[in-house]
Length: 206
Image 1 (cartoon, rainbow, N blue to C red):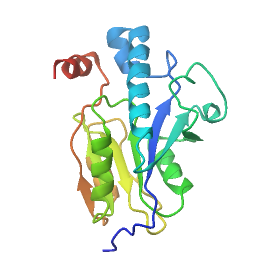
Image 2 (cartoon, helix red, strand yellow):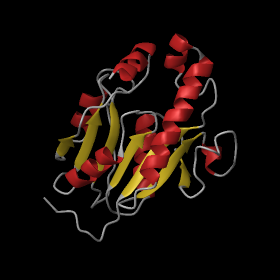
Image 3 (spheres, helix red, strand yellow):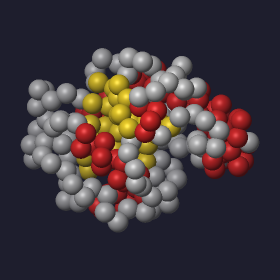
Image 4 (cartoon, rainbow, N blue to C red):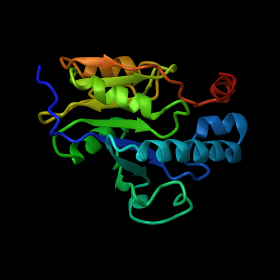
């Protein structure tokens, strides 16, 4: 298996949504109310983006939704640093959007993470890029069967990455593992994805 040459740049992409009520954390909003859920997402994504984008070990990009938010200002401008380049997520399901973002970059390692994972830190990102040194891909699982991050070494063209994946289900992580075969995939540390009031209460206890 090919090693990862130091000539390839490390690129981190943070998936982010405009923090507007009715657009973000809708399941959480059904438990704690739209105002509180939106405020939680704004605060969490602001911390994640600020911390990860300041690290010089990788280039950071924001893949944003809706697409027009990549080129305009809005109520989210204070949490999306102007120094971080924005690109649109594009259309389709999550698999289509992930694949489009992976294709956006030239060859080299790309790690895509969520902006709503409260435990996510620079240590987790550094560990993921390190794991790509001797793996073809990395996946960071969440407790609900999804994942907080996916990374690819990308030394060759990558297509049809997510065929058959059942998104937003307890099967998402395992389906993605299956779809990535025969690539060698490294499992990363499990983190908590806050989707419900129960998830939020648990995170605040630990």
